[in-house]
Length: 301
Image (tube, rainbow, N blue to C red; front, side):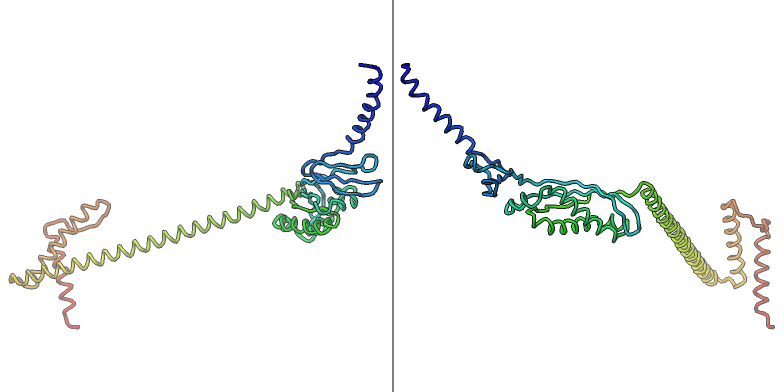
């Protein structure tokens, strides 16, 4: 290549290189879920959203790339309840930058995490001392909602949106936890004792009702049995009367049959003891005694 041509190309190459070095910094890319804050001569100029952008080299600069994703702040603090029990509370707060207030979020606060932690601490220490320990456990979600509302109102002016606030744990001192467990165990034992006593009462009442029902049915059976016996004797008396026997003869026959049946019944039971005459005249003796008793009832006084 001729020297003259080379000398002519050198300035062109240098010019292109200078242009390239000037244009290259002027082009920048903003990633998804981020926003770039551009300043011109040290003052805010514009907010650039995701995509390809151009700035004036040596005039404009990217002051900050703001992350628009949801972030989380975890805080552990100690406070006391209404009944003077000190507890440690773990609070998790999810927050993000409001896309409409990116400028406020960057220029108003230098350390938003610390500001959020301060507001959370103030809200917790205002809400928890109004509740007893048991109420604090029961109303944990209510406290979280109250903290979230207070935090949202405070941080909205700084360009931050509070997504959600969670109270993940409430931890009293170990001695307090042991005392609570003992109280809970005692309450459960008392309830168990009451349930056992109620079960025993139901069992006793049920057994008594069953026994009463059994006795009632037994008495009913005896009454029906005796009624059947009376009906049978009446039929037998009627049949014997129709056969021509007198009253005394009929009573003798019936008493003899009852006497033999009684002996047979006692012999089958085996566990009962009764003293009756076992002689052939035993039935006649009983008949004589019964007839004499009936005659004595008929005698005039």
